Image (tube, rainbow, N blue to C red; front, top):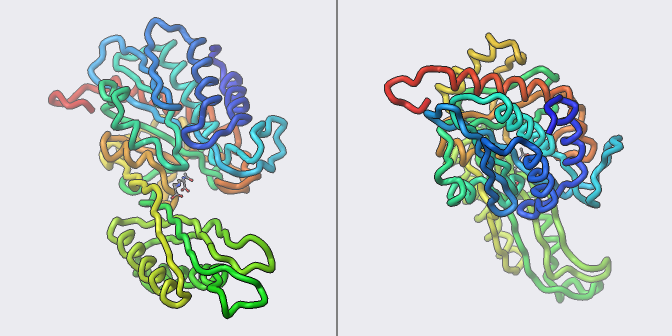
Length: 385
Ligand SMILES: CC(=O)N[C@@H](CCC[C@H](N)C(=O)O)C(=O)O
């Protein structure tokens, strides 16, 4: 593996071409293992966990372990970028920057293999961030147990910030999330005999509108919550009354209490739908993600370091209603996540997302210099950080 930025930009483009769903990142895993095999092997150990990869770089005189985490999965989006290196997997796209997160991970790994520090480094390539969530099970895995970092860092591309900007805040950065799947079952029938059927397309339409009242009428306006239904399905043909309908969405809140309130209101509305439309309903909350809570002390220290380092312009941002299963890492390991400005008019999860690759050297420089600096700080009173 050569070490110039053009190498990692090339890797990002190659990864961009092979987006895969969560826990099916087989080609991605193979690609990363091939790149990791090109590194000098004498100071690294490699483990796989499902479709993920853990790589440990041995420190010269280790007292602690630093971690960098990159997510690996793509999204079910038909790409509509102007790239020559568009996705080769029909219907799938890296529309959340995970291709860049992984390429930056390879660069961080390569940097510390070639330029050792005293402490250990573990780079974690984690599957299934978009769902159902790889962070929680990888944290519980045997493969990570004896390599558990003492401090961990991750980043996420941010279309709304200029290249050269890092946005972060101590404390909560991203929301608590819960997926939401509602299945309605009524009685299908002939389109011309509505009185003999219970139409689940109509029931779903009413429920969809009622769900909009949860945030606007049940959540304190000074609190924050989102209920988004991103997909709705129902029926089989234009002249058949639909027996079944399904709503798929996500709930976001900045506190666990609000998550409970939102879920209990949704459950009441769904019960009401059963009564009103004489149907049965089933709610499935899919996967839930812990909020991303940046360790206040370490994040403030990083922000002070960043102001002095000049590797990027610091912006202290507000919380976002995005979700990230990196929250589970931060529940267990002190550390932080930051937004990396990639300056593009289209947002995350958009078919035209084209993050500016000029952000890659900013991230690589910041992460490697920060970890090196942190590793050189004396340990106070036997503490790991
Ligand atoms: C950074 C980002 O976009 N993350 C995703 C995480 C999705 C979690 C889960 N599948 C859900 O939809 O609740 C996001 O949509 O924020």
